[in-house]
Image (spheres, rainbow, N blue to C red):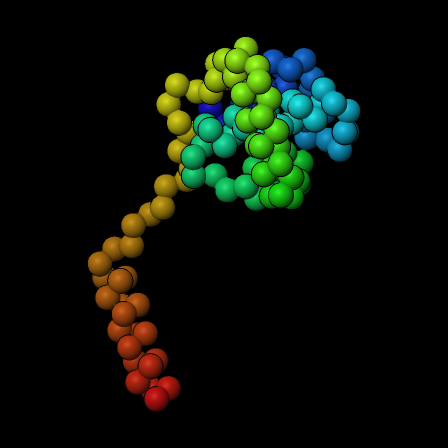
Length: 123
C-alpha cells in the first residue's frame, strides 16, 4: 500500500474526498481528516519524516504536522473509539521506505583513497 492509498483510505473513512484532504480548506471535518491522515502515515511508515508527510498532505509545513499529531493524540486519549477507528486504518505490516542500497567495498575503498589524497594535497 502506497502513502497516497493510505491518505485516500483515511479520506473515505472520514467521508471527505482526497482533494479535500490535500487542499487548503480549514473546515473542521476536513482538518480533522487531514490530521488523522498525518497520524496514520506516521504510524504506518516509521521512517518517514515530518517534511515528507507535509508534502504528501498538500505541501504543509513540518510544524503543522507536529501540531496535527499532537491534536490526534489528544483526541484519541479522550475518545477510545477514535483510537480504535484510526488503528483499524493502519496496515498489518509497517510500510517500508525506499531501502538504501549498500555501498560495495570497491566503491568504499575508492572514496577513502580519494578523500585521503585530497587531505594530503590540501595540507
